[in-house]
Length: 183
Image (tube, rainbow, N blue to C red):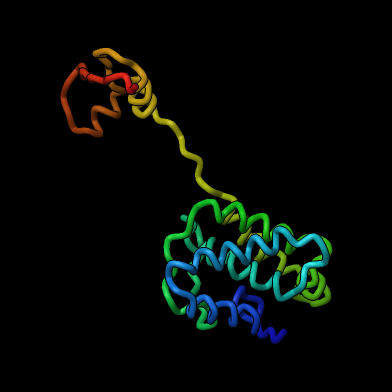
């Protein structure tokens, strides 16, 4: 494997993966990323460095679409646009990175034999943290009130939270909501 730097696409295998992704039809690119990550997660034996490198590159592409993700700016990464990737790929990418960093991984062993090994582990760990830090959906008081209303089958009067009223810019005291029971 020709490696010239520590970045996710700074080696021949990852650059080849990016080229393959560019040559893949737009509607098949997510499938290529998913297949790459799945292959790594499902490897029972010793993980070959080529598979691990491709998994790290695929995980970097998924992470680039996360809210705090770093864009892929290297000239060795894909040149063609990616579709918006399914959010379940984040979990799969975390699992793949865990497999890459675990024992029985040729790539981890190769990096651990170099002075840059700790830095590589840190960079991959940061990538993992970006993927793992998915913001959880939080239910606001207004959303909770609206959710309760949809479960009722009668006319209901609700006093909205003050911040909800302010947000809407409305000056009213009671909101009447009609809902019906779905059959």
